[in-house]
Length: 585
Image (cartoon, rainbow, N blue to C red; front, side):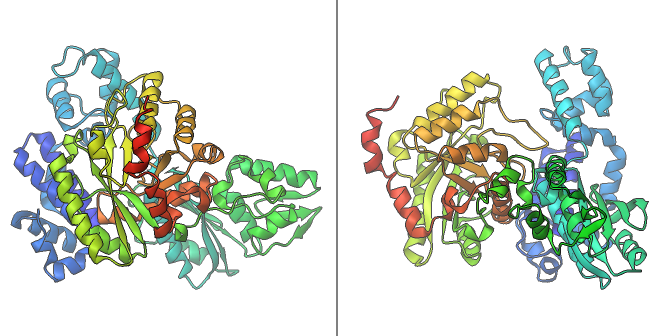
């Protein structure tokens, strides 16, 4: 077992203990241990061998022994016994937005509710209205949450699906009978939420069955749904479906294009081909009965009079017309990112110290970072008081004095209060190099109220970046109601950057609004929203969404060099902002 799986099981043990009503200290011990294991900088095997695991803060002797049992056997009797004691449906109930372990336990103990279906029926029957701690409003929220939960069943976040797809791709590539293989479907188009994994491969003639057997027998396969000469479907251990399509090598480019989609893009491409007297399908381009050979996808587009359309853009959203005019943008690449903002540390709610962040980002080739721990209103996340801010700024100054090829910018993720103000006074805000303004509370405002609230924060001269503009959590919580077009227009007027929050649970700004932001001349900042060392790599998901939103390197703030970003921030320095304060609305 790897550290991610062990961490997941420890976290689940904590949840199961909570559902049982166990001692809160015992519950917290397992949650802390789960975070400690996940935060290990080396793999679990090495951490056990060199003793780093036993030295890890948050892992006591009893839990350490359970981790060893899990690692060596793949099983844990204590965990399995707990699962037998708790109805499995309760673990599903707590996934519903607005329901936690305490409420789930109350529902089970008071009403005997142990499945989502029973809960939905109880809500329809108004059985929660008189239940202590619930009431009519809570019941309505739960019903709405159940609807959102059902809509998300069978769906997976991009990072989860992409990680599994890349493992499968690597394994298939190593098979000597495979000529070419690639990921297709919505993962290749970098949709933020994925239903299943699609793979296509060309295989040496006569070896199709051998490759299918190889695929179906992989250790990550839990069960086989269907198996044939040209297509097999399996369910992976993590619960995601994966399909493999096998074609001849001459068919590979056409199959890859077709299986990448989207359906709308494919329909538009077939329509274009038909007007040119060409038949187009997943097996090729045909003039009459004759195949028009293409060695790769670029060849397909060329035959149809188009420049190459990157997979991320294939949504029938104007990409074909732009390709015809040779006007597709040169999309941003991961290597274009020179630094990153929106990074949390142990000063607030993160598991990594400032020094650790500096070490990892420097080793990864970045030239600067912007630290932005939570502001004082976020007391639940260890929000920083003015005294704590001074302490952090002093450490940043000391580190910057030691660094020659790297710079740490002082920032904060300041809460946008319900009235649209930020939660520090102007004197404190003036001490930062940059301010990210984000909504973290009162999500139930009307669209008009929320839009006014955010626009007021944008108009504050100290606001440099608007953080996660809709507050959504993919597959968990819908964004608050806000008119994003008005918000983007306001950001353009006030020269405020909009964040593309690269955390896989957010990916917010939504790619569908990236083009509008670009048209309005707004810079987008691709930020990891990092709380753990591994989160620093979130930027890659943000780049994928930026590409899907037609963004170039010139559209993204943190493609600027260190020297350029210093000039940009200097224009927002206190002496520049002070005159603007006189005209604040």
